[in-house]
Length: 167
Image (cartoon, rainbow, N blue to C red; front, side, top):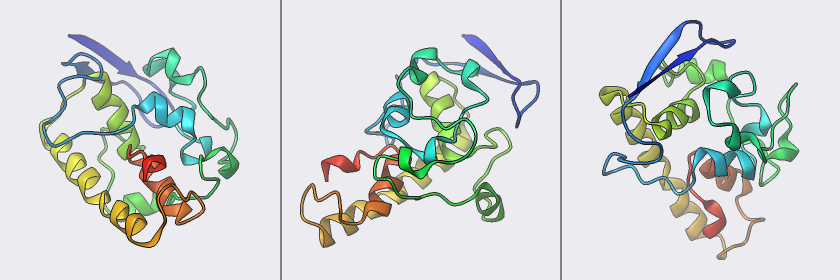
């Protein structure tokens, strides 16, 4: 087991333990289609994510990541649309746990790295599973692989590690 210590703009002196090998031993109900590295390379969150906490994660995750150092840049998103709500909205809706102040993707990155926190893992996996409903809408209203159809939903699915390029 390895300890990770976090000191960035949103967390000071936070630490967690990596209990599982990276990318392995996921919960039986959690089957993401994209790794955090793949998501960052595809273009998610307007490139404005994890910019100040790269030291926490493997450097190769950022080699080809589409990041915007100053502000969100929607052109970096795979579907070039804004599919995000502001952090203030996430907080208002109770979606943020203090251990992951940046939300679901931060949780996923840490989970992928090997951190396990049973109750929060189950909550986030339930949220991830519920997001799958957007796949049904794309299948119902779009021709297969028509990337111009429902681009915002497709981009949002990428944010949740569903590979909407395959729908």
